[in-house]
Image 1 (spheres, rainbow, N blue to C red):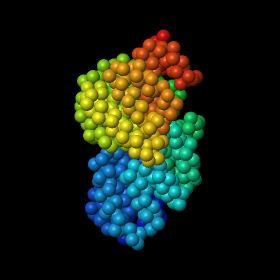
Image 2 (image 1 turned 30 degrees about the horizontal axis):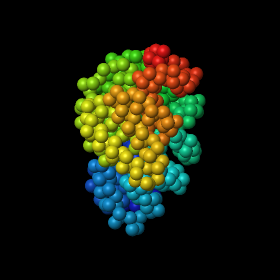
Image 3 (image 1 turned 30 degrees about the vertical axis):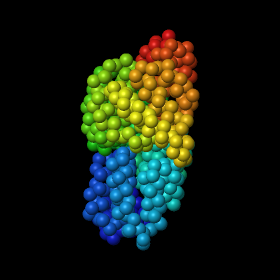
Length: 435
Ligand SMILES: [Fe+2]
């Protein structure tokens, strides 16, 4: 898993244990990666431990998390005078990440693994940047990166699970299946391999076998970190939703998805996406919005990626917080006008109209939502999230078309999207709306 030969300015075996433990836990999505925050206090003179603590914080995707990350980066700065090239590269990567230059940070992460192919912390962080930049949009790049690393880490189940996910995102399901099976042969409880199983079944439209597999995996996710536990259960809930089993989806929402670490952005997004999909499937979940909205309102002014903002704005609008939604839309307009490469790539032509469309749809203005979404749906994968997550925007566009009376357009759009995939019960129910 970790490689003791990776260069770092380390004075003791205990420091190596700290870094190896953190890396193993983060890359496997285990509980306990936050141990690096305590270790940063134990070893204030070790630059790579300070840098690793900064990386852990920056995964939080909030202003307070960025501030904490900046603190660790500043603590590392005076320690770097005699540090290794690897530590200097990590520092440069983290500075770009802190500035939300995800394109530049990804280049830095890929350069790190090109130089040190066993630096799986850099590989896992790169996977996060593909997510921020749109995992399906970036899938060929993600896959090429993983293909480069597998030969150097041939028996690493955590890397194989990442490689499998990249293959799934590219639509190469036989390759993804083979990589998942290799990962699970090494580590049957690898949660990210379970996650790829969920994606494969979803893409194939195999609801029953998907549910059977994921329900079998579910007990093991209790031992995983909060992100894997939440997100994998989110996938299981989607599979139940595909069978129109709202009760099981809501039971999973209440026990495993929402309310355990409600200030964690990953948990907020999965919770919102599940309730949003439940509403699209005809369920009434009005009473659940105010609590979620109260947790996400603090992200106004952050604007990490359009994928997040669309979810936050939907929750706020469904909770009736019109003033906050108006302020959010204005802030997104300002973000789009900032002129940096990510503003041009992600916010001007996609993020801003997406957020405006979601705000309209959430309060029943389906015509405006459909008009705003129509030109941007071909680029739906560019604003962050995975293939499965971005599908929510496609579903929303379908429902906006139906609700605004454009049923023929809705039918044509959905038929093209589904292609030859077997229809789920939810697909058939949805088709009935557009009949
Ligand atoms: Fe997923």
